[in-house]
Length: 310
Image (cartoon, rainbow, N blue to C red; front, side, top):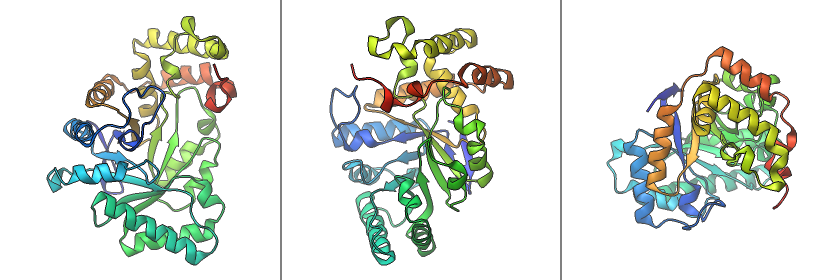
């Protein structure tokens, strides 16, 4: 597994998303939340495959507890870098915000069974935007106190990445897929790269849209047919599967540290690891062709919130 070294840490190019370990998550999840034994198998498959970074959150049910139980079963030297997140902060006063965030860190440390959090992110960048000075101050206090090693914030594509880059935080998590070029064209992704932040990327498959075939689209998704036809053309031309092309694109962008993919079973971890082996670094000519094809992708395609219900 390829790793990227940033801020003195080797981060695997693939991170394991663990929301599935704490909740019955996802429309394709037919088995519900896995048992501790099944979760251990998923986590062991990830570590054995070279994944050294986990993504979790206090909002992911008991994901932190499940990970903490698993950590007790492995040697200390095999422990991964763990990213967790906090959401819905108390902004009523600086003191209440400090009490809230420090309390959440204490709870996460207890659940994970660790003495220090590797990376704490704000689960929503809006928690920063509504109270910038105080949030920055308390996050920096957490880092200075040693409670947290690195700090960051998770954002959405509608946020101002230049403002995100100016937070002074160590890391961010953002959505990214080859259909959406807004944050590349406006220089947002470049700003993150220049800031030296760890950049974790989610949603590379755009909620599974890349796996849909134009000829079998459900009627309510017909609006996406032109985009998918162009995507299928590229897959054939580049001799890559839809998943491999989606991963290759994200990994070919400067500044991207790691892709976050979840798994409901150990077998899915193995499949994701195999897909990473199929990914290639796209040439400048290929990236230019992708840009030309998808630069004007309709907002309805890019925003799942605008997709009609079946």
